[in-house]
Length: 368
Image (tube, rainbow, N blue to C red; front, side):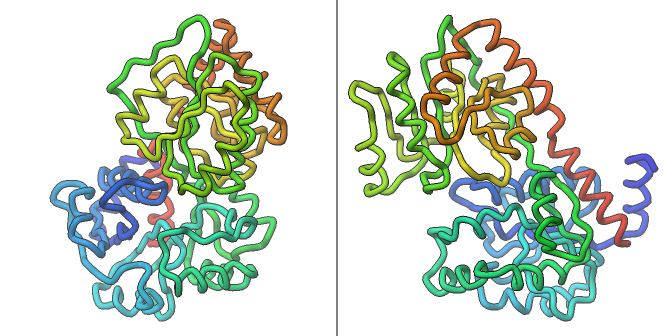
């Protein structure tokens, strides 16, 4: 069945589809916030959607003239009773970009999303959670049982990569069908990418949690004289002090403490490559963003990064600073750099929000 035929059929049924937009941040986008915003916008191009919000400030991130319903915050204890709240509006299908929405007693079809299983391997809870929720969060991740209960409350479970999909299947995390609705990069268009004979700037965008392994990038600077490592994200003083102590003598490592999207784009465009030595990821959005700009990447040799970057990156041993330094230096060769950029641009072009929205649309259709 063609996408156009599917779209007309769905619209003709006058289905009530709810999209949970309560995870959209109103200060700056994190991964879940951007995923919610972009996927919701793309879905609206194919289907009439009613958004769930918890803050009127979220309306500005929705497509113009969108229908919306304001309910409780997703970190409220009322979340357990969300199905009772939504039943009153009689939706046909509800999609949530996370898996924590209460499903008990629902009278509608439900698609829940679990982005990855990182928190089972790295049990530090998100910093923004209140103390009570942090304790509950830790308890939730002590075994797979609570997650299985949550996911089996849905009709379909979504995730963002084939790598994570295989992890779910390996650990028998749900009895429900698992579909892949990938992330897609935001498309930077303001700054023109420039490269000189040798690359000057090494860009890292991401948190400083231990599994992100920023230590390896800093230690790699021993073999990279004349180059600058830019660490862009927010960092607490204690963690910064730990990393500063690892800086090789004479190396140029700069901490930014957070940047705007425009500053991020400008740094990527300025004779740069993106680097990450992360030991574990659910996807790797900064890699996708760099490739979409035409910026090469040097990344850990882990499965998920091969899915995101394919031949559009140079892969290094996650435990070897020297391996990362060698990978970075290899991109000083113009021919090598040009080929990596070409491969990366072609590969990342297959990840679009419209394609992800079509996958979600097909899942909605299958439930009706």
